[in-house]
Length: 153
Image (cartoon, rainbow, N blue to C red; front, top):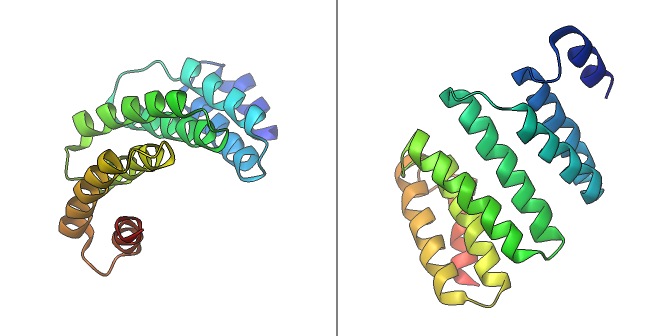
């Protein structure tokens, strides 16, 4: 949080670096199961991150994915789905449908479907992610193996 204060005082609250620092601090809180504080920082990051270049769009998508993760942990599945689908749309538009990061978000959306007992949609998304991961990462990659495991469940 010291980095947050230094960056804020030198570059200002709206600088893109502030958004990244807020997400990093949010990640620490998320890993410590302090979901409310993490969510507050992620949302603050989205307010800071107003620029439109592609690297900042990706940062915004990753922040939305973190927000989806927190909502999933809190069993707020509608809100998680909204965050994940917004992240997915941004990633697909910026990276293309076959990028590993897009596949990772597809798995997140699939997980929410599975948690809602919508196994048909979950399976469809896991299969789509698997194809993308196999093509982009190869069949020996851990993300591919994780997705295969979800399909087998």
